[in-house]
Image (cartoon, rainbow, N blue to C red):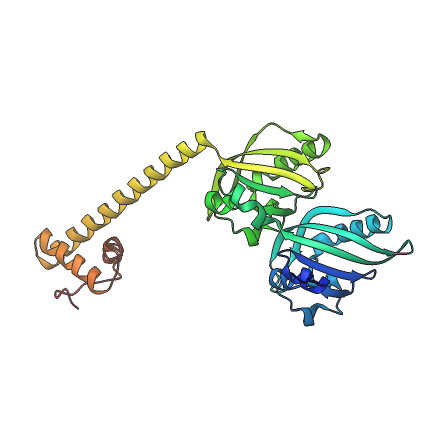
Length: 307
């Protein structure tokens, strides 16, 4: 069998990871097919442009400066931080950047990027906990799939933003204190209860913070969130009470409307109910809404139920 020669371009094209090469000023000189797919920029669009304008969001500018300091010192940089696609969305990336040296002088940078969300999803999607990775200033750099399942937060909407809007206003100062404590003390911290946004309201959750700022693959404070069992039971009970009260209010207004129509038009209660029901069906309205308008005097309801 003849020797097969595979050139560097073919090797880079075969890799499933994004491989990007820049000069020392950050201008892109090589951009493999996986980088096209991951970031959304074609090689023709990317080559010749500053990598910072293509993939580095504002919240990661300090990390970019840290990478350059390490490379100029001859040290390969490995770490996680959010990067930006062409469409502006962010995703957590695991990045390895190494310097290209000639005669001891840094002449370029080659970086390998993996979508950390895709890599971790098979593991984290099995966890009942929601996981956030926070910078020291509270900016979210990673959100696990469970954040949407438990609290309705879209991953792409959470990553790159502050954790503060997700916390109830009365608990924000407390969370700031928890985060400061976690930053001062490496390792896991005791869990705390707090209220977080869930849909249009708030839900109680248990939050546990773990300082992994010195761990290269994380470089942040990991916040594990789960619904508070005690508060969830109470919230469920309160929801059931509210549903029952709502049903009773609806029933009451229907009875009031039936009595009003029966007295006004000298008909029995069953005929009054049929008139309300027929109007609701004809106009695709909830029965209690029709009854409420009748009681308020906004809907006379003529003798004919189809009017």
